[in-house]
Image (tube, one colour):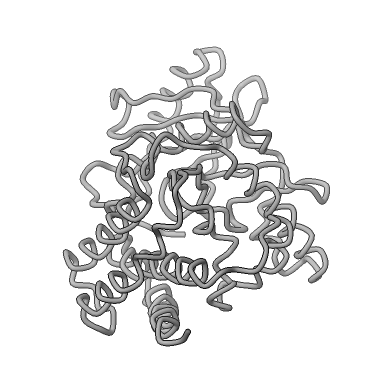
Length: 326
C-alpha cells in the first residue's frame, strides 16, 4: 500500500543499519538481500537476509516532516513497549526485537530490527480458506486476544502516558483528537462535526462501566496475523496498543457493523457472552472511533484515488445510523 508515511531508505543507509544492529560481519553483499514488505499502511518494513543467512525485518517510522494523526504520534515507541509487555506477561506469539535505535543518526526517524516470522499473512490467504477454516482461525484469535486483555495497566490511555483516571476521560480525549485531525484537514464527514460530537456526548455515560484498564491490542486484523501449518505463528504490528476497554478490540467490530466481517467465531473464542445494552452502546462508539480514523486518515496518507475514503464514508453513515436505534 502506498502512503507518504513510508520512510524508504537507500541500500547504503540500510547496510549501515544492519552494521549497527548486528555488526559488520552480517552486512550483506549484492542487491538482492532486501525487499520491501508492501502490505502495511503506516511504517515502511523491509525483509532482509543477513550475511549469515538469517532473515530479519526492519521497520522505520515515518519522516518527521510528514504530519501524522494525533493518535499515531510516537507509534514506534508504543509498538516496542507493547512487544515487551506481550512477551513478558503473556504467551501470545510475537516477534523478538533484536535492536532498536532512536538516535536519528543514520536516518531521520526511529527504527528497529526484529525476527522474521516464517509464515503466511492471514489476510492474503483470505480467499484460499473455507468458511470453516476462517472460523477456526477467528476463534483462535479470540482466545489470544482475551489473553492479551488479561494484562492490567496502571492507567487508561497510551501505554507510556499521559494516563487518565477513567476510561471516559481517555476515550473521549482519543476520539476528540481524531475529530480535530479531521477539522485541521477539512475532511468532509457528510455531516457537521458538531453532530458527531453530540452523539458522543449523548452516549458517553456507557463508558463509565469500564473501571479497570486492560492492555488493548486494537489492531488485530487478518493482515496483522501470521500463520504457519494451519496455526497462528505470530501477531505483528502493535503500534496502536493502549490501556482501555477490551470491547474496543477489532475482532468485535462486525458485531455492530456487518461490513467488517462476521464476529461470531472471534466472540466464541474470546468467551464473551451476550452483550448488555451499555456494551452495545460502547461497541457502537468504538465503531465510530474506528470509522472516523479510516475516513480522516485518507487526508494524511495521500492514498491513490478515493476508494478508501468512499468505503469509509459509507461505513460512517452506517455507524451513525446505529445511534438512532435502540
